[in-house]
Length: 171
Image 1: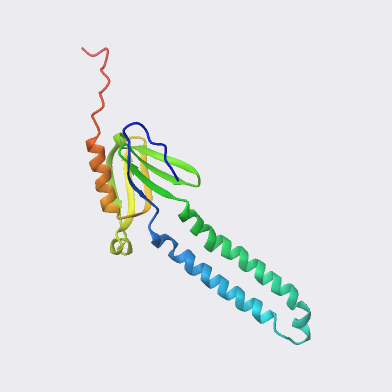
Image 2 (image 1 turned 90 degrees about the vertical axis):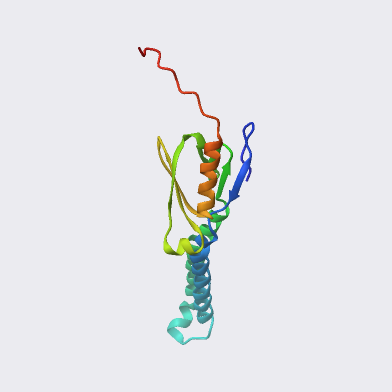
């Protein structure tokens, strides 16, 4: 994933959301495959008459439902994590998700807040809230969130001051 850089702009931080975000989807994927495999294997055994006639159909139903659940609750969240990028440049913060870039210019940020749960504090991740005049930009599961927030403030303060518009009709 490449971000088109402007003149005199360079990438400072380029990262994905914290790896912790795919822990539960990976566990769910493993468990769904385990249960579906056990169910399909059980239905492939020899059975007595009532189950013997329905076993081939039930086998494909178990495999199909298992594949759908594995895709929705395992593969899709992992794919979303894999295609999401958090990029801090010297002039803006960009979150690239699902092929769409959402960006906040650093000169529009007037405050950075952090939220961390106990588990997030242990692995140094968290939610970064970028306060702007048009609302808050919330970025979830930022790894090394304190360092990234400090860099946002540092590069925001390093930007040249914008000239304020002069009021024409002031006395």
